[in-house]
Image (tube, rainbow, N blue to C red; front, side, top):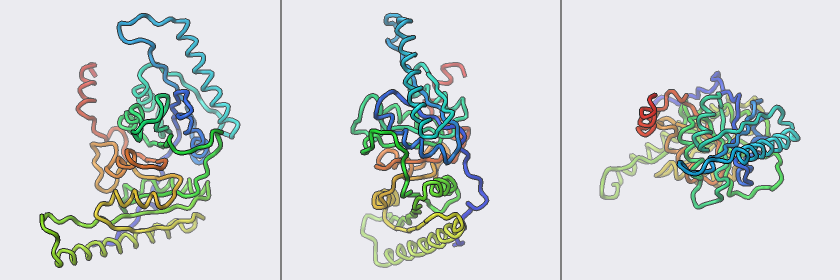
Amino acid sequence: MHALQPKILGVEAALINHILVPLDGSTLAECVLPHVSAIAPVTNARITLVHVMEPLQESGGPAVDPVEWHLRKQNSDKYLEQVAGRLNDLGILGVERMILEGNPANSVVDFARSNNVDLIILSTHGQSGLSGWNVSSVVQKILLRSYKSILLVRAYLPSSAEMTKVHYKRLFLGIDCSPRSEFVLPFAISLAQFHNSHLILETVVERPQSINRLPPSGQDMELFNKFVEKNSQAASHYLNQLIAQFSMKDVKITSHVSSGDNAISVLHDMAEESNADLVLLAAHGSTGERRWPYGSVTTSFIAYGNTSLMIMQDLPDSEIHQTRAEMAVRESKGH
């Protein structure tokens, strides 16, 4: 087995020039604002606040009162103006505002794709309130269809009612030693430098599975242990080289290699134990399929993670395969 070599040195970081912040007017949705004020200075990106006005009636119902609609739109714009002012008070200047009309998820996705948005900062829940689901249905749709980098903020976590900047003391980064998983590293380093954060790198070596109804024999166990030991040594060597590359960045970095029967489960446990303020993942790792917007690890952290989550999308939207449903809708519209 060849020694794993980090590829990050000399690789350009994914540029974040445009950040989109969807808001529905609820306090839950506004939990993203402290994170906006924490991320924006690191990227120097332009910020667009967007609010989607949904139609007032079902198809075939009574016509919308144009006066009422105009008043709603005015109130929505005033709300975004107030939020922009609060961000301005924290030094985030030049915040843009946009009122959209239509289905919330579709409107956000279409705007993101049409306006070169690089990062969407989303609250897991909004106007419909908290639920037993880890993310609301609207957020789930945006996650699956936008094909953008996402900062997902857990609305159910305790947070201050006042909008103050988040200080990321501990950043947890799951990495599988592949060039694809390294995609998130440049941003993680920049974030750690800005916030003087402790960056924790975690790699999990999964034990091989035996296709046998009976318990593995002693010989099998010896073979499995050798496999895990060899891969753990290779991962440790890789992480040490990675840390050495960033030794001059004035960032506190520690690394850890774990092993277990299920890599995703172990990674969740380690993220919880780290007490991190933010988990950072590339959308795909070494085995990530291009036909899906996220690999299995990232999908699991979206659905079951308990910490705010930064997902860096390593694939351009043109390389992510459309689902059958997407293709059928496009064909029905004549595209």
